[in-house]
Image (cartoon, rainbow, N blue to C red):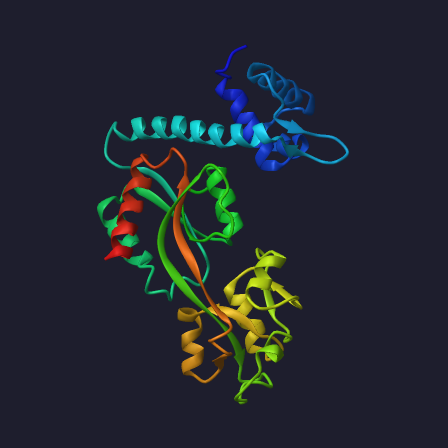
Length: 295
């Protein structure tokens, strides 16, 4: 049997795996369920083994399916990247660059994004730049779907098909506001803090919440601005980036709670889809950001 499956079949498989099922992949593929099933059967026949389980128990990749997905994403990225790279050699740098970043990073001196963008737009005015603010999971999905070209942020998971380049670590502390009962207290026991009403980020798992000192949360947010609103209300405590919270700390509106116990660092990365790193706009912006961050 052939061990070199059609690239079209690999793209269909990657889409099905990304959407975790045939039905959810229909809209993106613009195919019927029977057509998707036929193509998947063709791919499995070419490879000689089963890629996924589907039935009452839901959709899941087999062990070999997981391995094939990783290689398929790498191959698709390489092919797409080569085409875009070849096109960029035809003339001056132009086209579009879609950049994604976590919210509330504008106050982070460790991320000179505005400086990099300033240099980029001066050197390459023909490139149309789009900047999107999204949470970590949406940034990753955007990269995998080619809705984004580059992304900067902290990513709790690292799906296959993406390339992560370390940038720096962002300091996070646990805060309460001047309206909270503990604001003016000293010698606060750790056990008391761990039982407070804490705000959870929507992309945190239960184990992630536990790693940050809490067993349960009573509120959920999708952005740092929403987190800040709830903390300032006095009804909740929550984690914020140090650079983002500092202005309110200076005003006496926020206080760090037990920094020896409640604090952590988020490793920030510059991320692109595998195989697209040679595309000229992506390569230029990536190199600019890396030089700016690393001094």
